Each structure stands twice: as C-alpha cells, then as structure tokens.
Length: 458
Image (cartoon, rainbow, N blue to C red; front, top):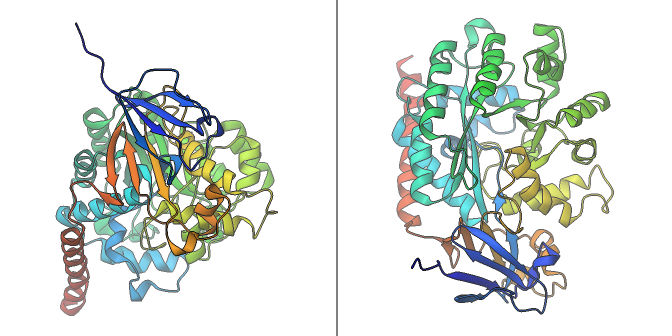
C-alpha cells in the first residue's frame, strides 16, 4: 500500500494577499492543495501545521529581469551619474573581462539576495560572452539547482560591436550562428516544460543597438520552433528611439514587429517610451513588460506607463534589473519603489499596494508564460513568501499587507519553493553568507584590477 505524502497547513497568517486564503494554505509535495478561509479549519486532514500568526503571507515573488553578473560592478565610480548609453559604454570594457568563476559567484550572490527578499522565481538576462566566459548560462543553471530556486534563464547575445556602429566592444560580440547553436544546446539541455518547471530557457538578443536584424528574426523563428519565450530590452530611453529611427527608419516597436517579435511569446524589459497606439498594439499581442522602477530612476530613463499597459491587456511584471543600475537585488524593496514611483504619474487609488503585489506575483508570472506560479490557488506551486512585522519600522502599522510596502519590508522570514523551505529565520538554507560575500568581493576586485592592468599596458 502506497503511503501518501504528508500535508502541511501554513495556518492563520497575520494577513494574506489572497483574501480567500486568510486562514492559510495546505501544501502537499510541491503544490497548494487547499485554501483555508478565515477562522475556518481545513476541509482535508493534515499531518503537520506551522503557525503563521506573526507572518504576512504572499505568493513567492517573481523577478522578471536581472543581470546577475552586474553585482560585481555595483556603485562603480566611472559609471556613476550617467544615462544609459554612456553608462553602458563605460561598463562594457569592465564586463569584457568576466570569467566563469566570477559569473558563478555573482549569480550565487544575486540569487541568495533575491531569495532573502521573498523571491522564489529569478529571471536573468545574460548577454556578455568573452573569451574567458563561455559557460555563463550553465553556471547559472547549476547554481539555481543547488540553491533550489526556480529560474527563468535567458540566452542573451550581442552580435553588433563598435566596428559596426553598435555600443559593445568587439571582444564581447559573437557571430549569429555561434549564438543560435549555443541557444539550441541550452534549450535542449536545460529547458523544462511541465508544470512546476524549475529551470526554463528563453532567447534574449540584448537590444536593437547591439544585435543584427538577422539575429532578431532568426531568434524569433528558433523560439517558435522550440516553443520557448523571447526577451529583450526595448523602449528604455529616448536615445534608443532616436537610434532606431536613424538606423532602421522606424520606432523600436515597429522594428520589433518587423522581426516577428510582437506576440504573447515575448516580454520586454523597461518598456518606457511607448505612445498610445503602441500600448494598444502591445495589449492586443499580449506582450509582457518587465517594469524596472529603481533602474529607471538611477539612469533617469523615464516612467513606465504601467496602468495603461495593463489596461490594454499587456502583462506587467516587476524586476530589480541589473545590480549596477539599481544597485541591489531586492524584490521586496522594488515593490515599494514601484508604488512610490507610480504615484508620480498616477492617482494613489490607481497604484495601490494590492496592484503592486499583483505585478510582483501574478503579473510577473504571466510575463514568463507561467500559470503554475504567482498565486495561492489550488494546484499552483507551493511557492510562498512570509514576512514578519517585528521591526521598529512596522510599529503602529494597522494594515499589515500595506505595511510591507509603505514601511519598507526588505527581508522575508520564511521562503518556500516547490513545497521546500529555502529560507528560514531570514537565512538561505545551506549558505554561509560571510563566506559568499568574501568570495564575491574578491571576484569584484579581480575584475576591476583587470581593467586597470589593461589600461596600464595600453
């Protein structure tokens, strides 16, 4: 006789983003099997319970855009106080020195930081492949598997360097066939398709100003053949719009559409500078937008039109973006930034704490093409983030759910991924944070020193 696996009741949270789960949720294996109403007992028998009466319960947060490697160049003096294009050209020469060891520790630190902030699904956009860095996505996949975090990894690329009028140096661009061949290898090796997938792959040419037309269109064809998603930066700055109009004779979204990208297979990072007609087109296509409030503020890029995009039908998710334009990997803090920045454009009643939590969970999941995460519904994955309100900043708060954003929650007390606790008492299980930071700091110094050595030789 087969013995059933134990059922755990996460019981009676202090507050919950889903009012139908105000009494908690039942978890079995990797899934939620019941939502419990306030003041009620579960309908199903359970084996264990965990008291959540001090905790605010959310679905695990979902990050939709990041650059893990950039944790090595946070607050980098030569790149400070610059808009996107000068910021990029300054840092490309640093990132060109990346190697596999630096990539591994940067990815580990970024994922640990995200987990601690309540993030259960991490997305990364990696597009820098130098002579010493050939296995970046493999490093990320192996690290995600070891940490037990869900990961949406994208095989980024750059094929147009400075010699062809692009921004990146020639030593970090690859030819189109190399990119497509490696993309197919990674899909075949790592991409999981079933509900509960822990690792998914997407194709992600970096931007209109760093890849060729051919790579954009061939990536779209490969994504359709292999049934994977597409991701890129788009409409981040007015400089990008001017570049596209000068080089292609059209606006960025028209260029994207021409290359076969305007569909519900695609999600875009930033998506700031769309006009009214373009927003409607994005909505009809179901193309998602990864909203990156802190990065947009740091680089002075502009304000994403989140409310209009969502109303038009475009999924809106939340993202921390790279840790050299943020400069942290904390999705809980990003929710607060999204709330405050949104109220510079919209009425407070439009950008509510509930709306921002929806962007960081359900909306982000839709951007990644996932229906099995981002909520607390029966049958969805047991990805949970639980926050306590026992610090000075929360004292006197009447609404626990709103307090997460308004009072500035930055660390989850407990995080569950696929039914397994991955963060306990604010610490990622099995990780020596001090050792990780020492290894990361050493990798960052080595990367910076390589730039100085190269400059001295020149």
